[in-house]
Image 1: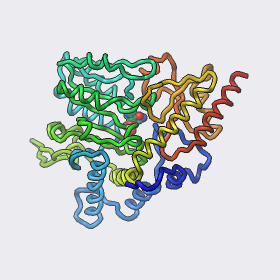
Image 2: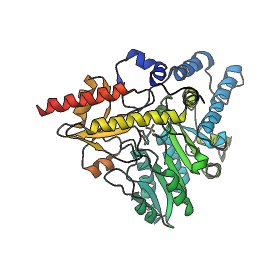
Image 3: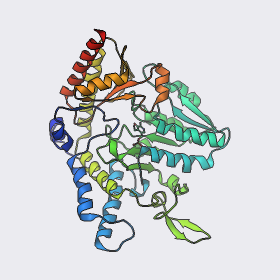
Image 4: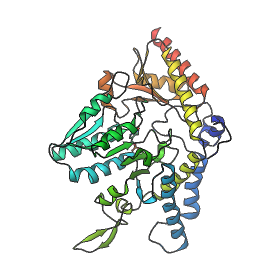
Length: 408
Ligand code: PMP
């Protein structure tokens, strides 16, 4: 880790080739996906140009090297999140796949009618529907932790919700819509007092905060490569060793077996047991480079920079007449959702795009949040480490112009 220099977004930006093609673009859609540094792009290109082979099966040099590179990334990811062993790292297709795996392989086989699963009001659909489906299948009940109008979870209601019937807590670390940072440490500890296992959806936190799965004592932690400067199509599920060892396979096919006959099949140990078929090998290798990229940065500096951007964006936007920020948690990250009175969120995004500001509009895969605030959608600006103050200003100025245009 480099402690010698302050985080300089302009220097970081130079590592991202996309910005050399779009120098004036304020890319503020990082909650959807981040841009990729050259090191990640090079790792993928080099693999296809100089190292491509399928893994685990070949004995020739290319195949051995590809396997070595691919398996080596497990250790790198383990180090990033302080997982105890590389074997606790399962390669998935992304956060969504990791959560579905836990819902179907860990929870569902032991779920019974009358049991309860607790989620929060601010879950992404990816951390809502898999649990809802498992509950429907087994006659169990989905309980939802309520939140305030500021977008903060009601801890009293949460504590009261936990019961001997609770089988699982599934919780988002950082809300992709509200920017709220949930007190997961405290919430995990409360669940564990009742021996309730916890999955944390880390899709939005992995690129913003240092994650220590052992300090958190979290049972499962899921995230996506593409939101942490890595490629799409690959993600990580961390699981405690004893859980993974007890979980049945999720998908069946090549590379996840020990022995196969027509009468009977035995399966490989975790994590291979959960990685059926040819996985995104180049993606995993690219993800390894993204881990290296993140680890070369100073975590405190990342947080200070994002805090500065988030605070400035919230302050500037709050000054715009008729603009309402959706989600005002004290502890929030650099993601700001808002509605502009009298203008559809999609129109806001379209006008912003004309001023070279890339944001997202809609329900952000969190429809219950929209229902709660009685709105159709929001426009969302989400920042990353390569964003600079001029982008906050470009966003605010453009919004002022939109407001004037619509009021005129
Ligand atoms: N959870 C959260 C909080 C997210 O922001 C996202 C992506 N928007 C997901 C889950 C799903 O991630 P993916 O689409 O990469 O599987």
